[in-house]
Length: 404
Image (cartoon, one colour):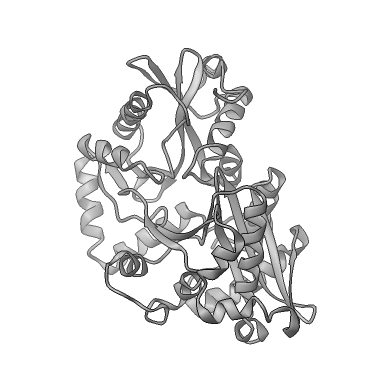
């Protein structure tokens, strides 16, 4: 049975008559419409659908659209209804990017409601809608379908999309199955990590749940990690808004690791559907955090928390392409041979997996040609790196902060 709130979603959508509306029309018995603001009733139904769909992410929740609206993004909701009942959809975030024009990105979507009758019909209707949107409104549309939706990627490729290297979401990750008991989960840890689970307490390592007051600490620790690993840290304004918005709807949790009462590491994870996923983390490499494996102590507490809350999967938040390829290869590889940022994730003994093929549609042909040629130059690659950073959320303009 569909969850309460999904019924009569079409009525909520149909009451909207505003600029920017695009009716995609009927595909079989599935009615698909696109709205920038479908109304409170329809958004509530959409969030319920997202929250119970395996393989998706908080980036499909309306609260995420509100967060991204602070930096100039506008959501487009594809809502697929059958007989007045919401059976699928997608939340696409759009923004006008210099040189490229109006760009849209869809991470971990489109979604088909669990238990929806004739799910293939819903999927085809959503593909029809995405093709129409890519051809009629957006100059560029990037899509990363959720786990288990390779058929969606394949259909989009047949309908004019092409494989994408834009990187709007990780190509794959590594995760732990939380249906196993804790002893079995711990038994898969690397030898050194397994021994630490018995020694942290005696070495003064403690882990506590954090709150919004700890976000500045997370930002400070993350800035140090960013300098070490060579990426741009997120501004405090962005991180504060992200935590506040997601924690208010119980979609984010923050933990802090301490040594003898001194905070040295922090980790923020988001939860949606049946999965919790690593989002932001940082630690003081110059202090005791590294020597005492404090970040691992935090993750162990988070694993226990997630299992206790009934989540199915604990996702470590993405892997670099070379790490993913090495782990999915049949040949043996040691953690020490992998890129340094991925090594701690592998020691937990999780299973690597790859998401469906990411795809993109770029129009007109002249823009597609210019886009491809630009990838061959250093200047073009820098522009695309800027655009990718903007789309994935690592640039922020908030009150009292500068653009990053």
